[in-house]
Length: 292
Image 1: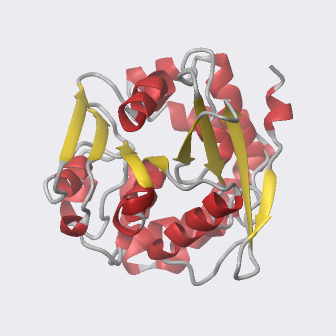
Image 2 (image 1 turned 60 degrees about the vertical axis):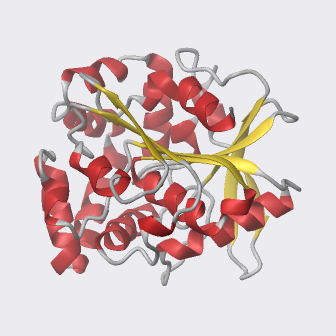
């Protein structure tokens, strides 16, 4: 498959005048599942691969969050705005009920849907998901760069925006080099996952071809995760699956504890020796769990 050909999307006009980009994978008549990408990212980040194919009869819908991919940046965005975007896209696609999962920075976006869209959901998963960054325990075991950005997002948000612009400029010059710098900070499990040519190609296209507003969107994500999320975990009325690798240094294990311990009907799937990119090998299992 030509990875560059994957940089396509459909676009829907939302009620408030913004555009929302998305891409579909799998069976057009299958069980609908929305997959939310990480921070930074786009719809390419949750694309299935030969190593992690979709289960049969699944229709995967991967939207770009505001400011990423083909979606319009939204300066005043809050986490609680996301369910309205998802509901509008589902309505556009004429879907009454569907499952959702979010990876890394997409995790909080899956959880806010669990809170706001419960009657429409058939299953929810938070995969290697970011927890509330306002909690001091959130940085325990976290890689140095993420610790720095987390601390700055609490107290000096303008610095985070400047850092993100600088980081994206470096990536635009040499995406391969930028990915290698990131890989060097990761545990062995994640380095092995990133040897998968197809998964690596999706990430590189994601880095090379994202929106000009992606640096702002990434900084905004950190800001959103660092303040009040606008809902209580205790108010989530439907079952939620949490998936976590024990050696994850991007979003370490304390994050799942911060969320699952407060979420009624939480099921935690822990994987010793696995890291942040466990979705690259367990996508089918995750989707099977939330569509069963």
